[in-house]
Every structure is written in structure tokens, then in C-alpha cells.
Length: 112
Image (cartoon, rainbow, N blue to C red; front, side):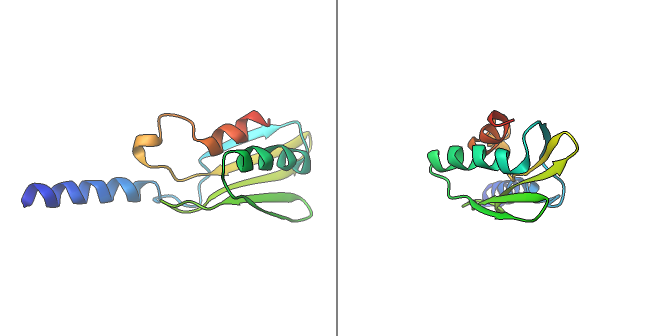
């Protein structure tokens, strides 16, 4: 019984570790594309991978939100910069999947 409790606490700690710093981006990228061009590239890739992105925009930025079944929603924000756009990726991954790029991360990098 004690081993089961220890294992349960260890798994819970790992699951919560991805949520420890919710305001820090997982990755920051630079693109030569405008926020609009970048968003028009990323959204079809996410839809192709059976993800359901929701897009919102402001005057200077686009925000793509993909719901997550395991953790907080994945968010990709792209802002207008002097030479293209700056991209901020917010993704909470389980520890086991942190070693390979996710579908969300691959789509973000392929559109740079």
C-alpha cells in the first residue's frame, strides 16, 4: 500500500511539473513572416493533425489556442516585429513526451 501511495504521488508531481510556470513561454521563435502570414501557415497544419485551433487577433498579434486533454491549453502567439514576427509557444507537456517535439511544436517550427 505504501508503494502504491508513493507511486501515485510521484506521478501527480510529474503531471503538475508542466504547470509550474504557466506564464513563461516554452519556446520563443523569430520569423520573417508577418503574424498574419505565419498564422495562415500554422492553422492548416494543426487542422491536418486533427487538432482544433481557435484563432483570435488584435491589431498587432494573432493568438492560436489548441485545447489539451491532459494539461492547460496550448497557445501560440505571434506579434509584429520590425523584421517579421516574434512567436511565443506555450505548451504544457508530460515529462515522458518532453524529449520529442510535439505536433504543435513541429507545426510552429515548420512555418518559420
